[in-house]
Amino acid sequence: MNETTASSTQLLRQINSGALLRFALQEQVFTAGEAMGATGLTRATVLGVCDGLVAVGWLEEVEGSPAVSRTHKGRPARRYQLREAAGVVVGLDAGEGYFTTLVTDLRGRELGTRRQGVDSHALGRAGRGATARELIRLTLHGIGLDLDDVLLTVVGVPAPIDAHGRSPEGEFWHLMNSGFASHLHGVVVVENDANLAAVAERAHEPSANQATLLTGERFGAGLIVDGRLLRGPRGGAGEMRFIDTLAAGKLVPDEGGSDGFGALARKWARSRIHSYGGETVLRQMPEGEINAEDVFRAAREGDPFAADIIARLGARLARIAVVLSSLLDIERVVIAGGISRAIEPVLEHARTLLTADSDLPLPELVASTFGAEVVVKGAIESALTQVRREPAAFLPRAARS
Image 1 (cartoon, rainbow, N blue to C red):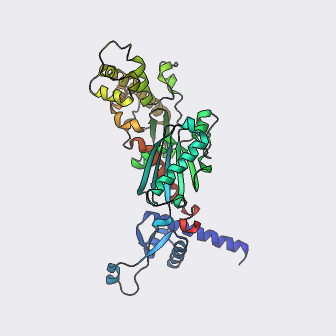
Image 2 (cartoon, rainbow, N blue to C red; image 1 turned 45 degrees about the vertical axis):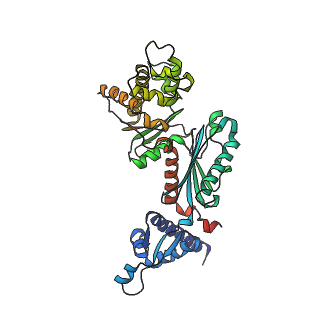
């Protein structure tokens, strides 16, 4: 066999293995006949590829069930399934003030999760990387696994990320995109956190034209247009720097372009509560302890001071929705992040403002159901998608041991 023929044979084997692995990742237990129907491969090829995948640790052969033995004469069909010990995927939400990890098997079944507060500015880049590694190690240890079981880790960070995992120049972005690949085990992919939130929302409620606004302390958007996630050459698609210019075409100092709805609700309440002339239940709290949830709760109870803050946030959201709808024909805007479970009063006010503007196509405004887990859920969804798309790019634990 010459070198060209050997190379072609190896490539064909890789293609066949990838096709069969993609099928196995979608099925529970399957027979060679079922694999033939799904992949178009011959029986001999399927059996040969399955034997190879069993040998390297991707698959395991399952003994025939009694039902098969009773209903078929001769030798029962050979049955296979994905090997549970082949590996796991890890999602990491590496925020500014907290890290959250989630570990799942290759079918997306959740195995373990942990959350830890962090002081990123005290830790620095190296400290963030080391903390992420230890948190993942502890999460794996809690479910009887170790770092060698990880096939792929997807990390979400609050910074623009280009197609190569890099961020533009900037002290904060450089800190957040902390060089995780040099600290974490195995294959590591770094992605913008709002983009991962958009991935989670699209998997939960498919939409070809959707904006996921990740908001809390900071503000960013994951944009899906015509079924594709927008990124831009520097990863800047979805950065919300235009917000400050939306009010009367000029800068509004206390609007805080990079601040999320949670930060704005808290800041506006604390800064204006002493100058407010009416009654408000928020005065019963120490000024420095008022948070966004307190403001939203007070608004639901009819507090006029809190209701004014909700109205301002609703107007802000309505303006953002109009811009996104006008520029990108966005049909659905999802508010995501830890604050999403309390954001409904803001959505209600924004909807009334949008309805009044009948000359524009109106996007649907909804709250995410994932709460603070939206980024880590999106990280897992992204990891599973990558493994399913190109499983041959990864090695199961048995092949790496």
